[in-house]
Image (tube, rainbow, N blue to C red; front, side, top):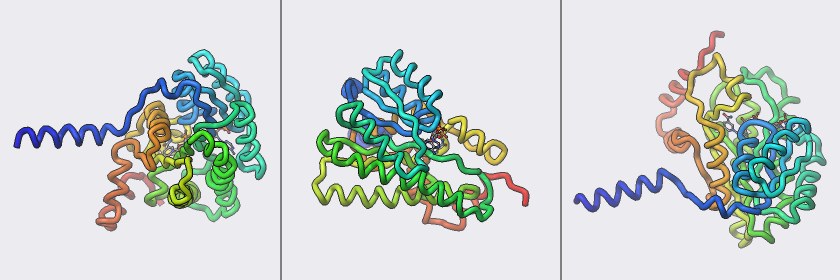
Length: 282
Ligand code: NDP
């Protein structure tokens, strides 16, 4: 009984720790990271740089990207270049993929991470903003993925989609944002099936994140909730791990998995708990 218990405990510990890999395997890898001027995307770039990868980063602000690229080079990146682009522009997503493939001579990983700014507030009926956010947070992901697939096919590469617990369950104050994340989970979940059925070399990893301590997220939730925020650097490492180990879906932090698992069991209790997380006076 003791031996059986020990083996079960060891297997559980291994499962909870999640997949691991040797960072050496990233050396020379060709990676395009979007939304890499700040936050989680910036941390993804730094992890890749330390591992000696070749990186193209993008976001709107060229001056900020330039600083990130400089830091990546000092950290050990084999190559680091940037391209300013606005994902709300119809032609920018494909332009960025073309640029990355030219610069890197191919592509091993496409990390889709950017989001457009969106208010943390009750929805005020602004359909135009929702339409704009759909282009930035959702449609541009499809454009980039589709453009990159032929190149990723040659390198047995991966598309990594950064999504959210808010693409799995509904909470207040994030209507347009949550809509884009539900759309991402649905679309790229379908793409996983289709690539597998086509026997494609390309995998898609969807990363489901809870609250992460980036400046933009902290600014939004300040005054609304006291929920614990988890470190962006660790979230970034989990995102890279998902792609390298070709996991279809990963969750960070731990509660991201369980909230999705139990959310439909007791809907009344769930909604009471969710609303209890936020301070709001009508
Ligand atoms: P940030 O707001 O810190 O970063 C967003 C990035 O996107 C920036 O680099 C920004 O740079 C870029 N960006 C904004 N608008 C555009 C645009 N129109 N075109 C191109 N790039 C743009 O976000 P986080 O790091 O917090 O989040 C990163 C990812 O993690 C997102 O997908 C988010 O949904 C997900 N996530 C985050 C959570 C959190 O709590 N932080 C929780 C769950 C998921 P610039 O302004 O220079 O364009």
